[in-house]
Image (cartoon, rainbow, N blue to C red; front, side, top):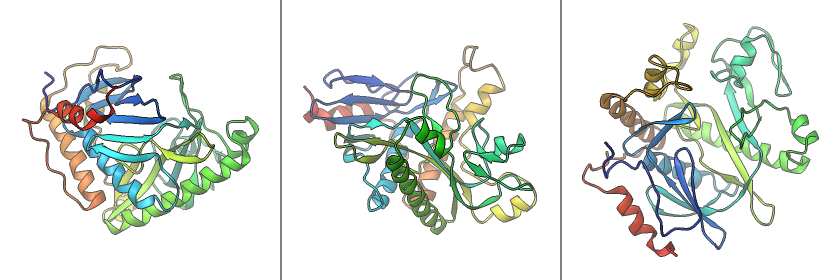
Length: 317
């Protein structure tokens, strides 16, 4: 049962132009700013599976850590943080290409470099890879593997830079800007992660344009949901043994569901509380490992939505 310390819904009637995403509730203000509230919903298989205590705050604060440490590289959409779960940002026109940067041959999705490589493909995303690479092997240098961004619920499709420009998804200038930003952001992310004993293996970025056409980093950056982190100390031995690198494995809920039903067709069984609590602990552990800061578990007596309403009262119409 949903309780006040779990942010399942973030609907606030006094705020205008509500749009409910999979995990965020958005409100567009008349002056061109956007309020983005990160809920605690856990989404997978195109549906909400569970509510993970304090997930929204942890991810918002992780992204804040990175936005503040990369603002010298490129502009981002953040204007202020009115609440630990909330970003006040610029409203942008999101570019139709998702930029994924990969430093290792890894991944499980249909568009991941490793999946396509294991199918026998060697020219991928406009890149040519040699034979003989192993699962989770470090690439000679980070590469960009862009995909079309499916706004209508369709599947993302792999793209090469030439296809992006020829199809008119981005101009040559836009591509040069976003690819340059992405590689610089990834380099900063890898360097700071290494100081924390982590490997930033890959990540995704979303960019948009403001009213002047300026390209701006949007959404989130280097969070456990948008990025793959590995533990640096154990990576060499596990790689040599052909085993998966140690990571922040927060897919307990997703794995539990797929073992019990077809999540795209069947009703989702009730998720055990122990699984929910374990996932919440992993998010907090990830925050501490990535940032070097601690985040205390949410007080079960706190009413998150009431707190957010209070902090956003100045934006009510």
